[in-house]
Image 1: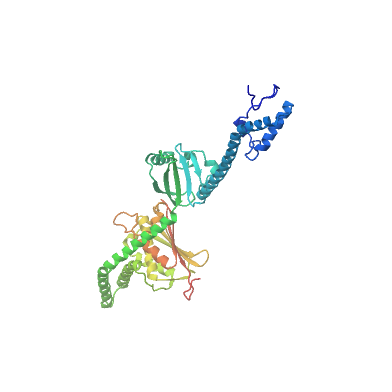
Image 2 (image 1 turned 90 degrees about the vertical axis):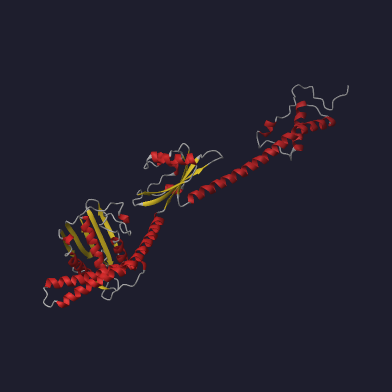
Length: 455
């Protein structure tokens, strides 16, 4: 019988067992690499010699090397492949980590508040903008909790209905809301965006909140400018028809004044008042045109106290002022302002008539003048103790055509014209009002020295 190329020694203590693949891959540090097969075979052969205790013939040694090489070749190949996979996994993990950090940085850099909820209404994303402000909530406190626990100031039923609609329809929802959470009235545009992790139904909803207060105010100013332009067009069409009868009234009053030589003082004052009021009516129609066609005003140094006295002289002939009492506290040291006196009288008269309407034509109106805190402005205050103005109406009272008066009692133009006149004079109108207690309209005009320059 032909002897085998390699015979195992008779020593029963030596057993050659091929290594298992799992043993070769279990430790990256001990796993042989493809560049070390000769050294590995030599170490195995030396271990066999020490175990057997007898020399091995060269042909047997060669056969042993061949057998071990055949056993270890796939193991070494798998070890090399495992190392390659491990390197690729490490590189891919680092790339994913960089992309994740970049995405998080982008979300945190957005100038809008953003958060994401899942179908259980639990928060999974909460950006930095949501952490800032008076109502900010830290990310650690928000992540994992339901949106109803975090936004507890809003009714849970309303929030649930909004989110359920996006989950059900998969359509973008956008709306505006107002909030005083920061201490002042702000307007926010809220967008609820559906998100899908796969091709199935909506799994998450992204909510973006953007402060659009300034944008809304700009839109309102544009709308107001369009309304004022419409006023100018309207005034241009009717001014001719109004000025004709006004001119007739003025001519008749002047003719009567000249024809009556020994006229009583009361009649003389009445005719002069008619002419003065005709001129003021013409000035009002002209001021309407100024909204669409601004023109230079004829301004002089005006004593505000004198303009108020003139206004009160006209109003004392007004039948609706008979039951009202006007208390004046006019500072005699008040400085001059550079203004158009006719327009100031128009402003004072409009505000006094509004005060009369608020007090239902009875009670006491207070009219005060004083220096501003910096001694560089002149302040006029008209105080009534009427029904006051609702907080929701305060931002709108200077808009053209906006009025809270019943039909037939106002057009909504008086305060808008007053606002434009005072703004053109470099001043401002401030309003403080408490519903049920009354209102204070405060006119602030820059003080002017004797040369007509602001101080």
